[in-house]
Image (cartoon, rainbow, N blue to C red; front, side):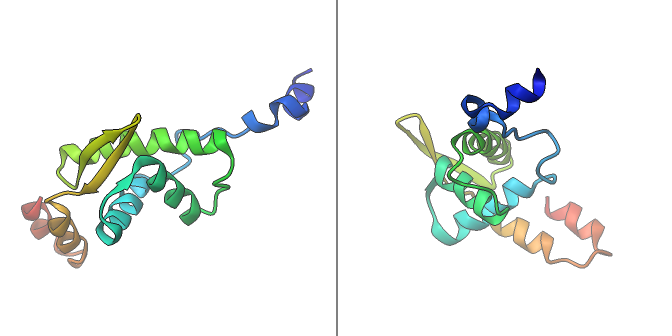
Length: 124
């Protein structure tokens, strides 16, 4: 019975699910911040599509794209509290994001050698 549920044509679009461990820790944040630094202001949907393209996921699958959009929103709201991104405005239910003030400090910290843990902590 359960095999028939997942192979039926009506349920083909719902077989995608973004699970808890689908992305590495901070992977979505890193991709989004990098694209915001280059392109400036982007919407959540644009950022989700770019995340999907970098991960070689099917960006035309609506269910998967919606799951990634929610993951992007959660990641960016958390990142906004750390001042790496900022929400510019909300347009038609979609947020527009821009790079934050702390982006340059993050780039400097990520370029420090691995033995410089003390210096990295001081920059945060």
